[in-house]
Image (tube, rainbow, N blue to C red; front, top):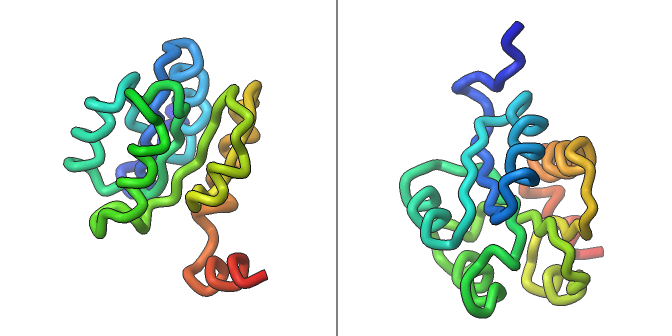
Length: 136
């Protein structure tokens, strides 16, 4: 039985340097989403340029230099600012991440099913839901 996502499923990018974690998340998320994975910022930029993504899951430690610079640039670029970002990290910088507008901030260890539920919740939101949740 093939439980892989169809070509109509939303595309998700996982930016994670740890191969075992990438594989674990890809296996779970691949049931519902078309998953792209990479282990560094350079590869992530290429994927973002070429693929229509619905969400990005990122371990900030994977990013070069100041990891917040990548996220800041991503949020202001017209081509990418609509894509929700989920931080999935061992860094407990939740306040900074949320201030930057990430859709969710998960502190590792994160079970793959928890990440899948978080993405499902985020991708279900309509623009109206987003406006209401930020107004509260």
